[in-house]
Image 1: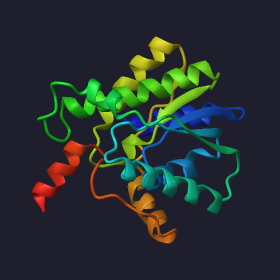
Image 2 (image 1 turned 90 degrees about the horizontal axis):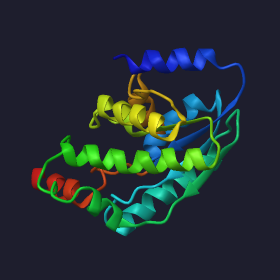
Image 3 (image 1 turned 90 degrees about the vertical axis):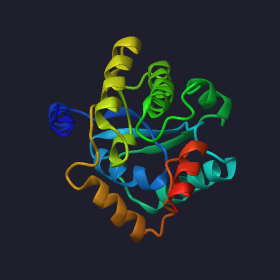
Length: 202
């Protein structure tokens, strides 16, 4: 499935500015996605990432996002909403999968946890669409992300914006923006398990 093509077709079909709830994991991953989508949507960024460990890292990524946003001039309004940091929600979601590695069922459940919260928030607050920045990473499985999005679209009756944001040099552009704005780029996905896996590789 060409998710970038699906995204382009959806954007071409828009006849007015819509409201988008964008789940975001960090500033660098958000940078290109917001730059791209802000031409079409009023965006509310949802920072919900109970997987991130430790709490200092969670706060650092959030602050990086908060610092970055005012530095840019976007065509449409951008807002940021932070949900409470509750790591127990993540550990409950991946219980029994802790020993699995990157790109495993553990990651699938992590995607699902965060995207479910985004879909629920979008429905409750009357957004037109929801999506996530997760697919910009070359380390994330875009087919899983979009599969989850499709399921949540049906469950909550709210449109999911299909995407593979790494396409059309999206990931490369995020690297350029990170360098231009001197953004902190983490060297592991976020959870305690990915941190330990990264340390083992060093």
